[in-house]
Length: 552
Image 1: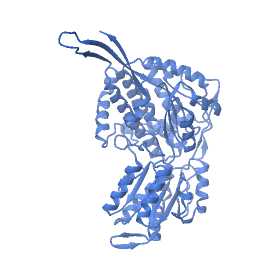
Image 2: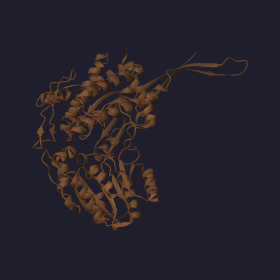
Image 3: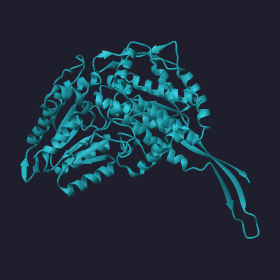
Image 4: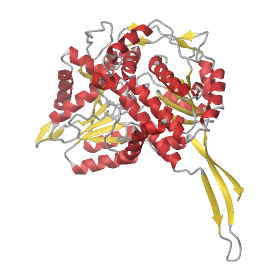
């Protein structure tokens, strides 16, 4: 049985679900020994411990030079070093491997990619430890977002790529009538999918697998080769991914150099790699400054970026403030707001809102929000599993300096982790400011810094919010209102500004959540991101179609 036949049921369902956009996942999101195997969790912990303070060896990527300086946000150095191979060598090997890969059939490429995903899924416990101790995500999130949910994103992109290429015939016959007494003109045509070239994937420090698997599998299925450039503090999850992919490729007699990674301490080397004429696709998640630099300095490549945006929540007249603040407290606290989908700016009219026919002042709404966050995080053991750990010192500095922005409504406090005494864990700081102070909220304060912003009125809220998106972009937005006419205005703005909108969420789903097969992550049409995960546009720039014709 071929790998395509082995996984065809999964692919067939995935092709259906990218049309349905409902809920589906073939990868179990709970770290269950019944699903993943008895003892797998314990084995993964032992494996992680054995990797600490050692070289990470990947077959075929051996080197005389090993680099690495990852630090766990839970308070210890990983001490793992990884093979550092010159960029020029990686490019040469990557091009050679692609020459073999692009000549394989679509079904063969898809089958191998599906097998890579299956193998990655089987090692989800290992990936969870790697993600947790490089990003600071709490364990359950690291397992889910770093494992099955990232794999869902990879499969979703794979399905879009397969769908597009399957619609292109490999052969066609052009037959044109030329009149009653004349023979038709007949031309035989071959249509060949041509990959663009090397796909460079530059990952972020917070969601290295979730934000990169779409690019990995969209590029592979369309015939491209991969060079990963992991964030310096997020190498381990990518090393695991590269190792697994290379193992599957080698088993199927494909040159494993099709998937590799660059670990370099030479900034010039990596910048030159970005500009290398063989690199035709770049995927990046991270800061606006570097995203802009990539877009400006890699004209030879199609550059897909997800950069910083400013996500906002609008509070209007709403009858379920308790449900609102309960849902909001989790959205504000989850992974210490170190998510590109987390809300930062909360707009509230300075004269307050109406709830169940009664006036609720701005300060009362602010107190409810702060109180709900405080209550959610009041038990340290629970708080650590929600907040995770702070990813880097710059975030800590933002929290400490938040009092310079305005009146502090809720102070941040440090929490001790029961297992990792040196972990850096901080609860959100909530600050009250005026909508007139645009310089304070017209940029991203990445991390647990929440701004409650006084607007002049309900209509002013809409204007200030729209201006924020126009200038700085956003991945998500949310609104709470019992006024359908007001909600219609909000929806119109969301559509005009191309931002995904959550309306009156009070249950388990948060505005932060973005799930494959149902949510398009970002829209690709505001300043926060120029692509969406995943849709046809995310795939179509990764290949071209070459037609070769001959007289019959």
